[in-house]
Image (cartoon, rainbow, N blue to C red; front, side, top):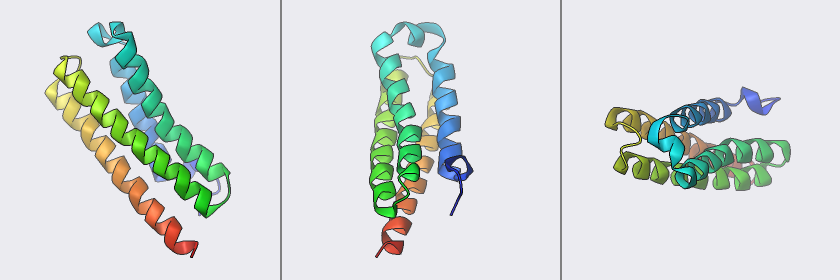
Length: 121
């Protein structure tokens, strides 16, 4: 297992997603929609934060629980991206890339949860 959370691929991918969400919410009309901008930023930060918090708990059961929260936040981020697309804050191609990234992270987190649960039995 990794010695630091930064070594985990799920952390690295979530960090890239957070960077992209912050980038797209800094510009244009998206930056003026304070409610959606703040909500999507909170949800994407929740993904990476819960991965880190769970990792630091040093318990497979606790880590799996926090990963489950991170997975939920990933779904929340996807829905907010749909709203951003519907409001023309992001282009269709930009949405597709970000949505696929969210789906990928969700799959990775889900697989990690399964691994942790099996290894703690």
